[in-house]
Structure formats: structure tokens, C-alpha cells
Image (tube, rainbow over all chains, first blue to last red; front, side, top):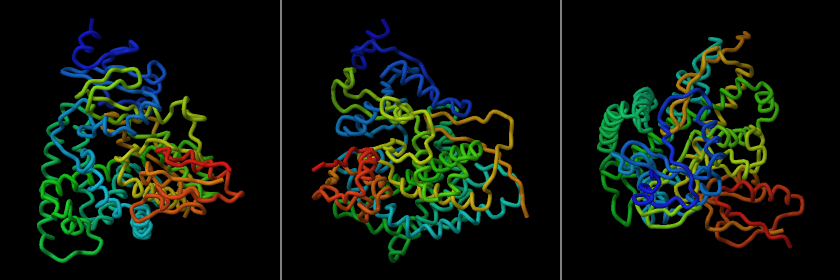
Length: 412
Length: 66
């Protein structure tokens, strides 16, 4: 009976897959979200996930996730959170569709290109060393609090031309925002407050630069001097762009670094492999993004009635491509459930794909590679410093470890 | 063997990172030969070219055996 109601309101299940009631916002034991993704993928290619007041289609396998990304004209980015089809924020260009989307991307792409990141790498490396240096002689640390939250934030602020003294302010905002992003009602108020404070900050930064000369290495000055359809970019859009850059640029790299260093703490043979051959660090970073992808799933809004992988979708339906399912789908991957440190054919969706592929991917990779390289140079051996169960934030807001206690022997 | 990159390239950068001997990037991060003519793959780089093909999340890379 339930499925006939859904068929009427939200399209039709052609293959008779189940209706489920999963909450993807709760904190779980480390690794629980990938286990869940594996279970969902192997039990059904798609299902309808109901929550109070709505629901959305979840596609669990690689082939369907790939096709969602490849068909942005059907799967709009107007909302990327299927439990919130009409969010209170608007990320630009994340939630902008064609034809405007690529115009924004062409403004931003050069700023975050591999060449730009290559040029910024020496400064990032210095910042990284600056965070590691005071930690080494302590013999232990909370990797998340003392390194993973701070290094990517400082590196990002440097790349966009904001003083790194603002690092702590930004980490607070990002934590508060993602407390509400996954659909947990208790986090909604903090999310709204963080958004407001961030916008106030960017408003002031933009006002300080308005009408002034173009400043080298300063993203805000660059954006104020950029044009969209031959006109200056409006203030609202500038603020929307700044907001998404901040949110996407800081929390995500923290999360990936946390999982990567957790893996390295448990796998001395992989630490040694990276020390012996630093050339494979970029491959190890890429495998981290596949195997420990922090994107549980990616939402899209359906723009027209269509049949898709056995489901009759209706215009306005929300879909959720289960990226964590796709990235370990044995139908696509060899050794799908193994961390292969030098995997080369690695076409994972850890940065999404299609026109909305992660703008900051080249920055994120570079930060991760530098972090691993610099850390292993001075702390080649380390292990977990706790027997307690480590927990991860809900996948709806992207998985992340809130703490990662590490210890090592201090040699000199 | 020839290697071709279609306009489906979104600038993920995995191909030119894996095979700088074959491919490079433009100022936005796309492969320079995106949407252009195929390039020749030297005999000793053909295995690498197959890995490059498999690393693209957009399936934008194709190999043409001659």
C-alpha cells in the first residue's frame, strides 16, 4: 500500500525495490557509513528513502551514480541535499545549472588549477611544517584538533589571500554549519548563525577592497574585478561564492586527512611504502579519496519525468547517488574492498564528476600530499593513542572524525 | 596506438598526473588536447596509456589501436 502512495506522488518503482527509513545524519562508529553503503548496494540497486514529510530515491551502484553525474540536464544541482529540496543557503556555482554554471566555473577554475596550486605549494609546505614542528616533541596529539582542522584552513586562507590569523574563527563556523547540514534539526540553529556570521565577515572583506586596486593573490579583489556576462558580479552572488568556498574548502580536507592518517596509524607497511617511494603519495591520496570517501551520497533534483535505471522518476523528485556505494562497487572495481596504495586506474567519485566536479580538488590533493610527506619525514612511526571506539559524523553532512589521538616515540 | 580526449574532460587531472610524459594541463586544469586531435602513444608508453584511460571518471579518454 505504501508503494502505491509513493507511486502516485513520487514516481513509480518499476522493479519493486523497498521503501526504507534510514537516517544519514547520526554519529556512528568509525567506518559504519561505508559498511552501510556496502549493505545497501548489495541488497538493492535503488530504494525509496522516507523521512517525516518527504522522501527521495537512492541509487546505490556505480553505473547509476555515474549516469546521474553525466546527465546534469535531468539531474539538477538546485538542491544537493535530498532531505532538503529547498535549502536556506545557495552555493554558487555548486547549485547553479547550465548555462550559467560554466561561466562561474571559468572565473574560478584558474584560481584553483593544478598550475596555481603548484605555484602555491612552497608556501603550503612551510605552513604545514609550521603546524607539525611544535607537535613532534610532544610524542602525542589529537591529529584532528591540532593538525587536520588547522593546516587546510590556513593553507586555504593563504591561497585566497586572507591572513591565517583568522584560522580559528573559520574552523568554528565550519563545525557549526555542518552540525546542521546533514538534516539533524538540533544543528539547524547553529548552522543559520554560522552562515550569518560568515556572510558578515565576507561583506566586510569585500567592502574593504571595493573600488581599490587589484591586489595580487587576493581572491576577493579578483572576484570584484571579474565580470559575468560583461557585468560585475552582484553582491549576493559574491557572498554565495565566498560561503561555499569556505565550507567546501575547509571541512572536507580535514575529514579526508583524518581517515588517511587513521589508516596510516594502523598500517606500518603503508607508511613504509610511502617513505620508500614518495612518488606514490599522489596515488595513495587518490586511493584514500576512493576507499575512504567522505561523500556518503550526492543529491540532485529531477527536472523532467524520465525512466532511470528501472525507476520512473517524476519532475521535482529528489535523488541521491550513493557515492560511497559506487566507490566500492565490486561490479566496477578490482579489489573493491581493499586499500590498494598505488592503485592507478582510479576513476573514483570522491570529488564527484561531471560539470560540478569539486572545484578545490587540486588544492585538496596538494594539501593531503604535502601533509603526508612532511609528517612522515619527522614522524615516520605512529599509532593510535586510545582504546576507545572512534566515532564519525553522519554521512549526510559528509563523514568526518571529530578526534584522532595519535602517539609516537620521541627520539631526540 | 593513439590517445584522444573528448570534451567530456572536466579537468580532474588524474591522467596528466599519472602520465606527464603524454599529457599536460591548461590554465583551467583541463587536458590541453581536450576535444582536439588524437596524439601518438609511443610503444613503450602503451601500458601507461591503458592506465590513463582507466583513471578518468568522465570516461573522456579513448585509445585507438592501429
